[in-house]
Image 1 (tube, rainbow, N blue to C red):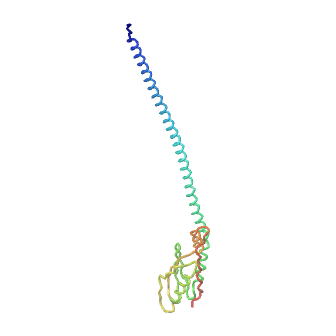
Image 2: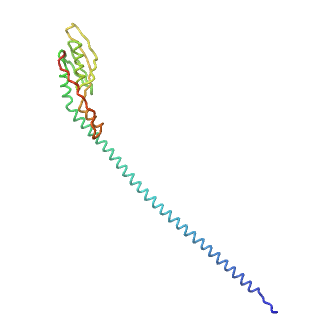
Image 3: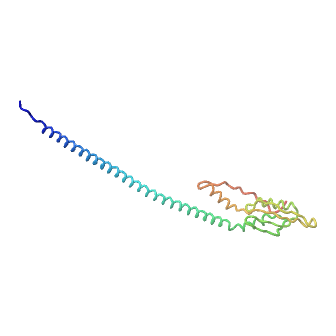
Length: 210
């Protein structure tokens, strides 16, 4: 019976298997490296896209902040202009005030009273004079209280010197009023499309005392 030497075949088979294992290991390593680079490239691409979006959003936010700042600046300018317009309107309305005040001083002064001094400080008016009696002073105060251009009469001094027919010296204070300014302020407070409260004119008291 012939003998067959299997050692060379076994050695060749082991060598082939080692080569196949080496090729498979190298292929697996290359595949892993390839997968790593592909995944890394995809992640980096996603990060770059997100960074680009973030940059775009930041630029848009800065632009909106700039527009908001401009709008706020325009609002401030509008408020300043409205304040100036209000001051100008009040000045226009207050121009004839002194004429009305002197007219009311004449109209509200009853018979038996004459003024010796008129002093104005801001909106306060100090009136000094001589009255035939205290009832004349009371009538004068009622007339002032009924006036549209004067209000809040307050008696400070009332004294009689010398003979009883010499009259009484008095000092009273009043406040200057402007019904036009008050009506304009009421309309502005009520807002557009609304009417402010209607002011009722107080009845005029005749200049003569009863």
